[in-house]
Length: 165
Image 1: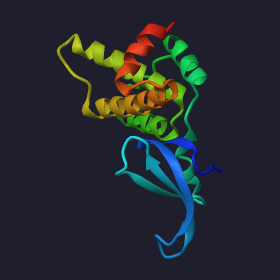
Image 2: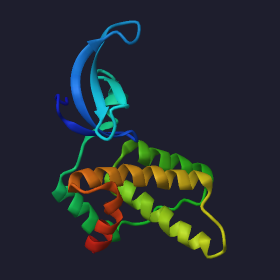
Image 3: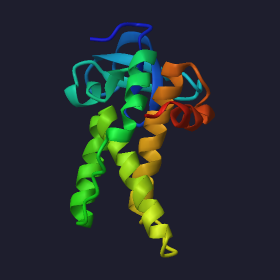
Image 4: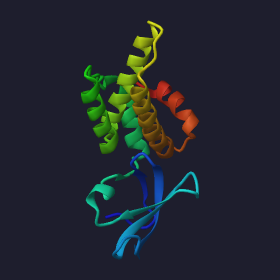
């Protein structure tokens, strides 16, 4: 259970603050919702039913600065997770994005970044689907790290490069 004022990562939607917990009739019956507002824009408001496990499962507390620094310190040891079969790769990468496990997100970013470098040697680019996974994973991770570290999103890559072991 989350509380009013908690800051959470909401799936691929970004960092949100729980503004209120209210009963609303948005469907046929009234139910309780977390009312989330994206911290970077007042335009995005999300209504998450508190009794919907799948929807609530997309919420997780934002990591602390210490947790962010620990993740960064161990990035070099994360193993690539390339899968040759397109369908299996799409299925696994979709699961990683959905589950939002930060270590797996880091492995996914590392994998696709290295793959991008590899295919660039022969004058090619990543498949559009893989580029989409890379962009989504970077947005999720970098937004959370920026918040946890108290820096601008544009500074995250530089911060990682200075602190990676």
